[in-house]
Image (cartoon, rainbow, N blue to C red; front, side, top):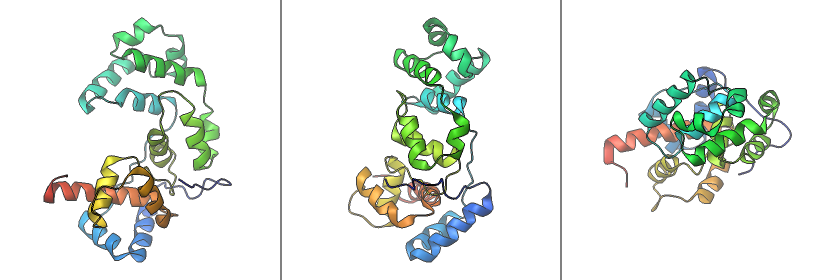
Length: 215
C-alpha cells in the first residue's frame, strides 16, 4: 500500500477528526453515505503506543480474546509488560505466564529490538510499518493497526483484515470477498481518510452480521 514518505499526515486525536473523515467519505460515494447512516457515529478507538501495546498484540495472536486477556493479566501482574523486564526475563518466567515457545521468542525479539517509540510517533506510516515489521512476530496487519490506533494516523488501512474484506464485499456488492491486494488498491481511493474508511467498514461488518450473517 502506498503511504506518504515525507510526512506522517493527519493525526486523529478526537471524535471530531473521525467525524470530519466520515463527512469526506459521504461526499465521495453514496455507498459510504448509506453505510454511515446505518452505522451511526464511528468510534475513536485510540490506544496507547509503545512496547506494552505491541507486546499485547503479540500475546493476542491466534488465541481467543478471553485467553489473551488472561495471559496479559498474568504478565502485568508479574511485571512482564515492561521492555527491560522482558529483556531480562528467562524463558521459564515467560512460559509460566502462559506464552508459547514461539511467542516467547517474539516477546524477547521485541524487547531486544529497542524500538525508538518517540521517533515512531513522528514517523510517516511507511516508515512505521517498515520498522515494526522488521521485528519477528509483527506482521503488516499488526503494524498498520498500531499506526492507525496507537499513533492515530488518518491515512492508513489494513487490507489483510478479514472483517474489512467481508464488509467491502457487502458494501460494494462484490461477487467475492476481495483479496488483500485488491482491497489495498480499492483503498487508494479513500485517501486521505483510509483509517476512517476502515472504521466505517468495521462498523458495517457488525451491521452485516446482524442482518445476514457472514459468508
